Amino acid sequence: MTLLLALACCTMLAGSDVAADDPPGAAPAAVDPVSALENAVVDAIARAEPSVVAISREKAERPEDLAIRGRPRSFNRENPTLLRRRSPLDLGQGELISFDFGSGVVVGDKGQILTAYHVVRGAGRLLVRAAGRQQFDAEIIAADPRSDLAVIAPMNIPGIPPPQLQPIRLGDAAKLRKGCFLVSLGNSFNAARRDGKPSASVGILSNVARQLDRDVDDLSNTPKRSSLLNSPMLLQLDSKLNLGMSGGAVVNLKGELVGLTTMAASPAGFDNMAGYAMPMDRVGRHAVEILKQGREIEYGLLGIIPPPNLTNRVERVSPNSPAGQGDLQANDEILAVDDEPIHDFDDLILAINARGPGDSVRLKIRRNDAELVKTIVLAKFPIDPEAIATTRPPAWRGLRVDFQSTVLVNRLPFAEPPVTGVVVAEIEDGSPASRAGLKKQQVIRLVNETPVTTPAQFDRAVANLKGDVTLVTEAGPVRVPE
Image (cartoon, rainbow, N blue to C red):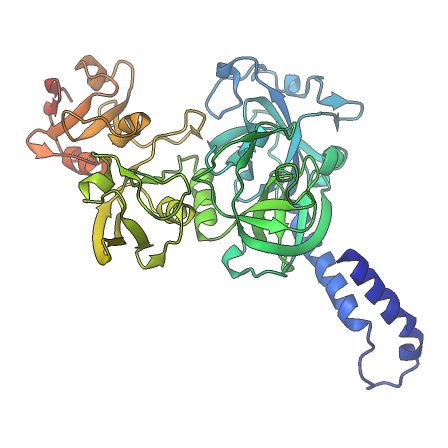
């Protein structure tokens, strides 16, 4: 494509001298379409590049040293100058030197920076270089390994003014079509370590829905095999994304963010020149908003096991899952989710991922040549142990609950639960719930005499209660003082 554009430019420019002598009012010269495209690309880069940053990572030696908001850091907060201590990331006049690097995009008015999860995974320190040669430490406020997305933000350090960052405008990847011109911006080969200016590459959108059977383990760009059954469909670009571009921006010709680069290349032997990006469609933008708030992204759970060829046929149903409770059966073919056509298991996963736990979905199924409609209330897929959320839901008397599926799903097919209810997910030390003797993973069936099966039902049941409250668990009643 680059060669063709170059040839077109040369051909058109060859006739530009004649066009220059044309009288006023004559037809535009043939070079104008190419100039217009060039100007559009230049303008798109100018709009977007102030929002693209370079990220360097120092690995944490211990899990408790991770650069997560709310955790104590190794430097002395009483002496902010120690923040600028010399380290393997600093050399010379503040120049960032690192062999562990990636990119990010400013997406929030409070300096929130969207990046790829694998760029910040295991970080003990994150140094960011932004436009205007700004350099600052950042911390993770939320991270979701399942989508390979994370949001970091500048650290609030007494005595050090916050950086001046410009959020990018968000576009809609759902409007993209094959052949759309796209610009990729990022910290290619860590070149932005010097001045915070990202590198750019231009190409077309090769495909709007690609799913890959691989993952990136760390910034060494080493692939590892993974089913990635819950990953979104990715944008496929014809522009190669070099090492360091992970977490960078993919923008349209308006300079709007329509994708976040998440993989530098595909498995050996397949699309070696291709790059991939997480689309900023409805689902992607919703995920970004949740992560900006420091919250956990919750995924719906249906509870079926697919056949080996991953078609839309149900191989097996976990008996106490939503699918089991909704009377799905082996060999059912799932044809649609809320009128959204389902052709294979990837379609089904994407449809369920777009909905959250507690949502009600209508499944059109084919069973023995007859079409049926089943209404299913989704449970919650278990939390990835490496997920990070620094904004937690409010605790009731030191107690937080979650869907029972978050513990049962680890033993698929679901073990037969002794009771239905909500599971104790967290108990704060010294709280009334802790003093009452509640334990993690206990199942709460009733609040006083009110049945509860979802966290929302539990919250409503306890909202206005005063004094002692009796929680009926599978082990018996527990009285929680106010």
